Length: 133
Image (cartoon, rainbow, N blue to C red; front, side):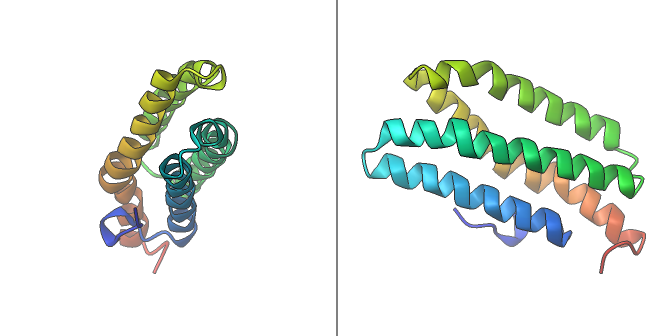
């Protein structure tokens, strides 16, 4: 997968974060394609989940800093995503392949749906207010 224009927010630092997320998800996919499912599961549960948490915190700080009016609703969506992923994570770490597939599908869906539809709005807000070019 690539970070296409429809996934860009226009906020350089957030787009870089989203690019890294794409790279990490692609790494999981490559490991799976190579038949390294246990490595993919470990990479997902250690590297990818940590990156997602780091990014969500940065995104929330950014939205607060610009006075984004939809911050609370956006943060709630993040909290719901975190909860589902963190509830599945112990199962992934124990080698539950179903929980891994569910987590991975959720992460891909989040990337395609949340970023393209929800994150773009804070970019538009920042651009309209002259906070970004």
